[in-house]
Image (cartoon, rainbow, N blue to C red; front, side, top):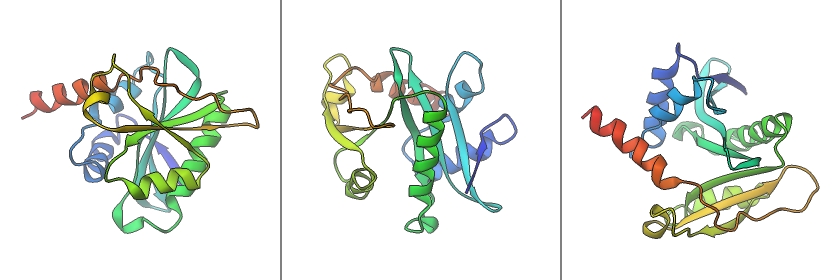
Length: 180
């Protein structure tokens, strides 16, 4: 598997893949921000030879310099259950280690998401509920934070620190409303 970084040249294709994988969400703003020097976000198209099989990203929150966050991770339906997800997740963890992160983290829906939840647990991630009163979306939607240490050190739980999901959703909605 090879990872091709999202650039100005392939961003529209990346957005089409992201929309195929997450039809109710829009990652355009995140991908555009990743092209700017001010943001430490990296998003990639996942390829098997010349065939795009999915998308993945690595980003961080400025308040937490120890954690790499998995972003916009998905494998196209026809390529699932063929090992691509595990291979891509391993590549994400290796990139995070190379960049000096101590923990890998991600968030996902807690409901109607049994396959993803089982996948992350099978790959060594620990789940905790996300409920932060300063992040209103966490009170509307049941979310999980998954975490994994990237070395032999003990996992430091997330403990409901704010991951600013509400502002992420606002970003998506602003773009969608501008273009509808």
